[in-house]
Length: 309
Ligand SMILES: Nc1ncnc2c1ncn2[C@@H]1O[C@H](COP(=O)(O)OP(=O)(O)OP(=O)(O)O)[C@@H](O)[C@H]1O
Image (cartoon, rainbow, N blue to C red):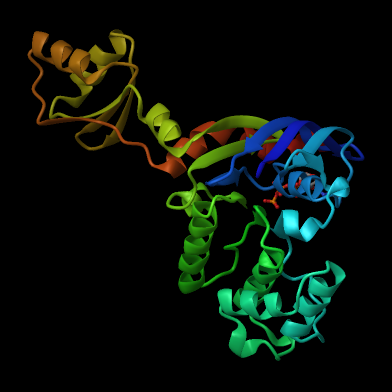
């Protein structure tokens, strides 16, 4: 059972509620994007899944078991959390050899993963001299060492150059295609646009959406029509009176929310208002995400001053 099951998870640090009753499942054979604004609770959730932090309440199971009950954890779940957390004086290969030995894994696997992440040439260099991209690759090599069916990546593209980003995307997709459950966090939805199949969106430690990328886009695009007309003011009044929310987007364009395009066309025709273009609006993933997380971001922006009062 290659899954991660998070159930009613709660975790506070003093007065800060980091995770607040969160439940979701990461399925095998898919890349699940774990998205939320800064401070939403993504890293905390991942740390609890990996047994690095104890939850106050709820459970986080890997393959149906708590992390501490896993026989050889590295064979069950691999993770890239903080790529900076390396011993700078240690050579890349020695770092992985130490991990392999500690987990009873064969030394030949170390050379396999170094090859897999493109670090074979740098294997004998010290990690302290590595670029951020190389550190990420070394961290990923560590995650893959035990050939685990479940993988967690916390913000893996942070600080990478375009070539590194393309590489990571391809790697995540191929790991999922092999049937593994892959959870990857990001605070930027756009980063996951071409990578994730499924999305778990959180804000303030709570679930905002648990959906496929396709469904999220469809929901954000629904009932929104973009209209181009030279009689903009009249058209806006007419459509607002018919119950739509209207917004002027540029000099001759109006975005209409809450009416179907058929209804908009009918109303314009009945009132002899000309238009040169009408189209269903297609939301971008970033737009859908902004819609979903608006409240969470507003809260974060206001929390400081309010607390200070
Ligand atoms: N060890 C800790 N001690 C105190 N507060 C913490 C600790 N770890 C996390 N927090 C707080 O818990 C909340 C959630 O943080 P977390 O790092 O899980 O969020 P995140 O979604 O991963 O954010 P980011 O994208 O910024 O990494 C934040 O308010 C953070 O300040």
